[in-house]
Length: 197
Image (cartoon, rainbow, N blue to C red; front, side, top):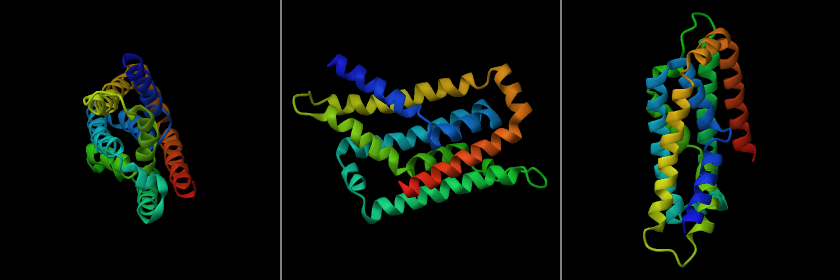
């Protein structure tokens, strides 16, 4: 069972650190707004993860995996939210340079970014299902849930902390405008991808 848990943990780390809305938004927030905002966003994302993990392990993710009106609605809501975030980054560099998006709580931005992404739930459902076969003890689903949430919290907090290193911060300050536009383009592409695929 230890081998299975380690395999699951490795899959989760790769999944959580693959390029996606959470990772993109968290990286940008940690660079632009600092450690505290980054960690608040991590807690928001992890709250969303806890919700998704609960549903995936409980088997409800099958509904979203099959599609239908609920899945389609979630996709459009998520795409709209990502486009709103991208618009806020672009708007920051027009005129007075005031940022639209970061006036909102980093915790809430992270929470909504994660909750409104149906691909998170479908990913968890696909990854969790093979590990929920018969023959495991009653604590097994809780261990999987704990790995999902615990890894997200630990590794994303570590990521935010690493982004605060002076050399990285100085680099961001030099190219912040261009990087924000890259982040906005990335969020827009993710929104389009979410709706089309």
